[in-house]
Length: 254
Image (cartoon, rainbow, N blue to C red; front, side, top):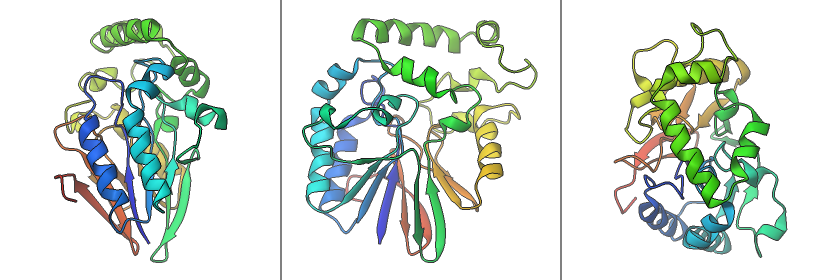
């Protein structure tokens, strides 16, 4: 069985590579791929209202539905930016084109895997109630939140004052989130950064090989892999087949 795992399109954000994503889903639905796992933040409900997103990006849902109808199993794992999908019922879509899970487990080539988004292990974005609230917005509120978030990210001192959930010296540096669309930004040599904190928590919790998104940093290690994102110059995804994990970049033909 051949699976692809991808995350962090953020449809609704001006940095989203939506057209490339649509091309990929079209390719996947016409290839030998058996399962597509959407590992969160496919839609950005922090930056646009849910109604606007599903009207404006109905072509994204349409392509996902086409893949599902043609026999590809599609799994959706809500992320912090589309966490509302974890709560929505069938009435939101006439035909829901995916199965919604908070994590997806499977075995391939005798190896055990688990796919998550990764935000629940993020000391900044791990609060489900917070993320649910941030996803229930209209366009005007979402625009204001986006502007406010950009200001917070650029001023780590302000963030320290607003979110004293951990001692200042041990909290991950919020400044590492400033340019999430840049490849590799979260890999900077900072022992307090978000990426390292998430990986440390993931290693403690899971014995299986973990595939996740959220950080926008594509990488493949011995015990985990990250899908990267579709907001950077390089649109990346993970392929799992016969227990082998491969990190790939979409070039328009596979």
